[in-house]
Length: 117
Image 1 (tube, one colour):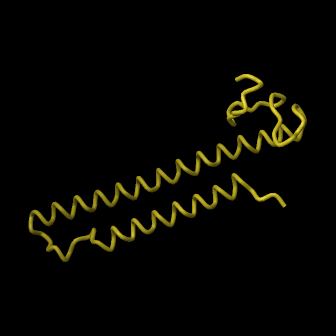
Image 2 (cartoon, rainbow, N blue to C red):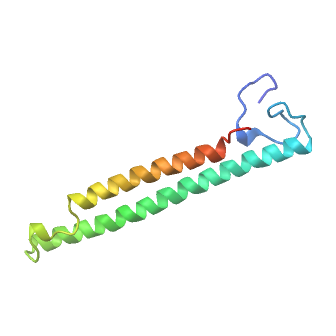
Image 3 (cartoon, rainbow, N blue to C red):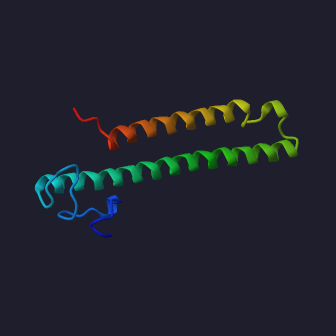
């Protein structure tokens, strides 16, 4: 990356190489700012991975129960009214996922982009 290139990625930031918001390159303040940027990246990645993992697990459980419902229905062991995965379950899953995504996006936004006093 050349000195004239204005595009700076967080992974390219190293102490003493660029100035962050007017900080003198190579100073303690710049090192702290770079550490904060790296920590923000790590936290964001971990939160997103956790979100994906948990929602995948929930979808796996719902899929397993749905397949059990299908088998029980096909063998005549339960009636259509006795299903475990009903419309209410699907709507609750969609609603909960939407609320989770909004909450995660809000928290990550506030953490990654704090309001300066």
